[in-house]
Amino acid sequence: MPSSTRWVESLSPWPEDGFGTERMRALLRELGDPQERFPAIHVVGTNGKSTTTRLTEALLLDAGLSVGSYLSPHVGSWGERIRIGGREADFEAAVSAVRPAAEALGTTQFEVLTAAALTAFAAAGVDVGVVEAGLGGRHDATNVLRTRVVVLTSVALDHMEVLGDTREAIAAEKLAVVQPGCTVVLAEEEWHGVAEENGAAEVVVTARSNLALAVTAAESFLGRSVDPHAADRVELPGRLERRGESPLEIWDGAHNLAGLGWLLPRLPAAAGWTVVCSILRDKRPGMMLEALSVLGPRLVATESTSGRAVPTAELAALGSAHFDEVAAEPDPATARARALELAGPGGAVLVTGSLYLLADLSAANRDHL
Image (cartoon, rainbow, N blue to C red; front, side):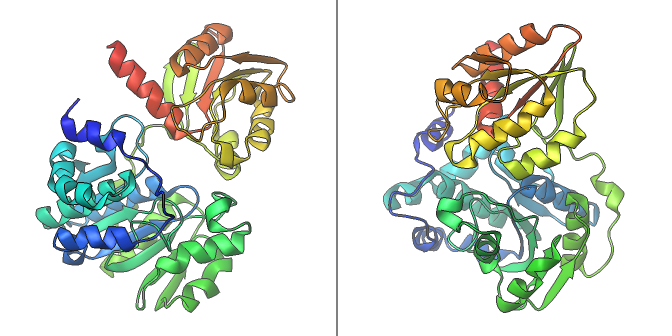
C-alpha cells in the first residue's frame, strides 16, 4: 500500500478536542486557501448525500463543466472519495500534497482528506466542486467553501450526541452552512424557514428523490436546464448493489433507521433473507435489528473495523429478540461466507448496517485476490 494511504489510515477520524473548523482553516491557509479558487455545491443531510453528489457531478459534466467531487465514506477504495472530471483522482498524489502541512498541525483523517480534495480541485482548475459534508454542517471540515448552492437531502435522527436530539435541531446544524446569497435546495418543505434564516437568497423545494435534488442543484448552479438522463448510468458501490445471483446477494450501506426505511421496500422479492450486519453503537442498533427482522428469520451478526461498531456478541444478543436464528461471526468475511452457506443456492443474503462493513469486505476480497 502506498505510504500516504497508509498514513491516512493511521489517523484518527475523530477530533480529540471537539468538532470545529479552526484547524481546518489553518491547514487551508498553509496550502494557499485552495477552496477560494472555485465555487461549490455543498451537499448536506442525513442520507443520500453521496448519491446526490455523484448525480450532480454527472449532470454538470454533461453540461460541459470541469467538475471535482468529494464523497465519504468509501466502500471499495480510498480513491472513491476524490474525483475530478468524472474519474477518481490520483489519491496518493492528492494526499501527499497536503501531508507536510497536515502533519505539522496534527489534523484529523477527515480534515486531511477534505484538504486533499480541495487542493486537488484547485490544481485541476475545476469550474465547480460538489462537496459532500461529513457529519452535520456547522462544525464540519467541509464548512469552508465558497458556496453557491446548498443541498439538504433529508433530515432524520442520527448523530444525536453531536447534532441534537430533534429533527429541528439537526436541520439547524446542517443548514448552518448556508452563506448569504446561496440557493438552498430542499426535498422537505418544513426547512424552508431555517434556510431563509441562515441567509438563503432563494429556496427551491423539489421532489423527494436524489435525482430530483441533483437536477435542481445543477440547474440552480448553471441558471439553465440540464438533461436528467445524463445521470442514468451513475452507480455507487454499496447502494442496493447486487453482488451475486445464486444465492441472490445485495450489499447496501443503510446505516440508520431512515436508510433502512428507504432500502427495505426496494429489495427484490425473496422467500426469506439471511441478514449479515454490523451496526455502529450510536445508530440505535436494537431498533435497526427490529426493522431488519421483517426480511426473514436469520441473522449473522458481525463487527466492522470501526471503533464505534457494536461488538459481535452484543449485536447477536440484541438480534436474538427479533430473529429466530442468530449466528455470531466477528470476522466480516467469515460472516458473509456463513450467510451464503445458510441461504443456499435459492436463497437471498442482505449485507447491511454500515458502509464500514462493506469497505471491510471489499478489502478482504482484494486481499484474497
